Image 1 (cartoon, rainbow, N blue to C red):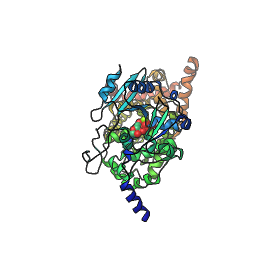
Image 2 (cartoon, rainbow, N blue to C red):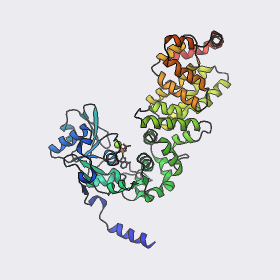
Image 3 (cartoon, rainbow, N blue to C red):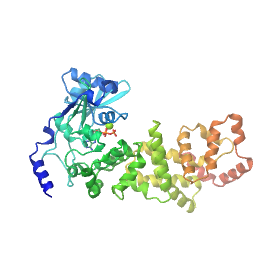
Image 4 (spheres, rainbow, N blue to C red):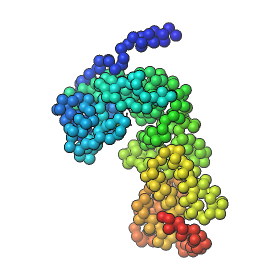
Length: 446
Ligand code: ATP
Ligand code: MG
C-alpha cells in the first residue's frame, strides 16, 4: 500500500518518459556490427544521415539482432518528413493516409521509413473506450521511443557509430528475458488493445516472459478487443498464426483469457470438438514449415481452420438431397459467407481457400486419366498437403494420402500400374452418370 503510494508520488514527479536521456550502448557491449543490417536499410540510413537527418534502424530488427534471431525486416525511423524522405531516393513512395510512411525500394528490398511520432496529448482523438483513433503528429526521437509498446521494441541502431540508443532500458530487459511495457500497461492497452495480442505473440516468439505488471491487466481488459476493427484483428491474428509459434501463442492466449467471443478466429479454432485435433495438427505443421524457412500461405492456413465447418455443412447439403460436388460448393460458399465477413478474410485469400477445398474430392478419383490431370493442377501441392493433414488427423484413410505420395514420385510405368482397377472405375462412372446434370452445372461455373 505504502509502496504503491510512494511509487505514485514518485511517478507524478518524474519527468515525462520522453524527456529521459537515452543510454548509448557501444558495439563493444552489444556486439552488433553494421554488416548485420540488410544492405538496403544501411544505405537508407546513410543516405538520410548524409543529408543531415537523423536515421536509425528501429524496432523488431534491433531487438531480434540483440537476442540472436534473424530479423524479418529492417525498419528505419528518421526525423525527416515523408516528403523529405521521398525526395532523397530514386525509388520511393509515400503510403498511408493517416500516418504517412515511405516505402523505399533498394534492389529487391523494400524498407519502411517512418518519421518520428509525437506524444499523445489532450488533442489526440480517442473513442469512448480510450482507443486512440488518430496519431498523426510528428515528434522527437525521445517521443517516438515513448510511443512504442515494449522496451525491447524501442531500440535504435545507428549504423554510423554502431551504437544502440536505448531510452527505456530495453537492452537490460532483453537480457533478463522480459517483455516490459513502456509506461502504464493499463493505459497502453486502453490506447490500443491489440497490444495485448502483441504481448502474447512476441513473448511466445522470442521466448520472453511478459512482465507481471503488463500481464496482470490482460484478463480484465480483454473485452476491449471487441472494440477493435475486424481487419486490424485479422492482421494481428495472421501474424500470430504465422509466427512459427502458433501453437504456443494459442495456448497462451487461452491461458490469459483472451478467447471466447473476443477473437472470432480463435473461437473457430478452439470451439470445434471434432476439428480441434485437425486444427492443432495444422498449426503445428505450419509452425514447423515456418521455422524451417519454408513459408506458409494464409489461404492454406484458413482452409484448415474452417475445414470442419465445411465438412458439417457439406454433410447437411447432401442430406438435403444435393449431389456430392454441388453440395461441397454450396457448403464452401455458406461457410465463407459467414466466416469471411466475421473474420475480415480478404478476397484474395478466399480464392485460395476455395481452390484447396475444391480439389479434395478429386483426390478420391484414382482411375483413368484423372489423377494425371490433377498432378498438373497449379494448386496440386497445396491440395495434396491438405489431404495429408486430413489423413494424419484421422478424417480420411491414410491409404489415399499414401497413394498420392507414391503416385507423384514414381516413374511413368509404375504410375500406370498404380491406377485403380477397372471395376472401381466402372462404379465411379455409374455414379457420375447418375449425378451428371448437377456436376455439369458445377463445371460451367468454374
Ligand atoms: P515482428 O518481428 O513481428 O515484425 P515488430 O515488433 O517488428 O515484430 P511490427 O508490427 O513490425 O512488429 O512493428 C514495428 C515496431 O513498431 C515495433 O517494434 C514497435 O516499436 C512499434 N509498434 C508496432 N505496433 C505497435 C503498437 N500497437 N503500439 C506501439 N508500438 C507499436
Ligand atoms: Mg517488424
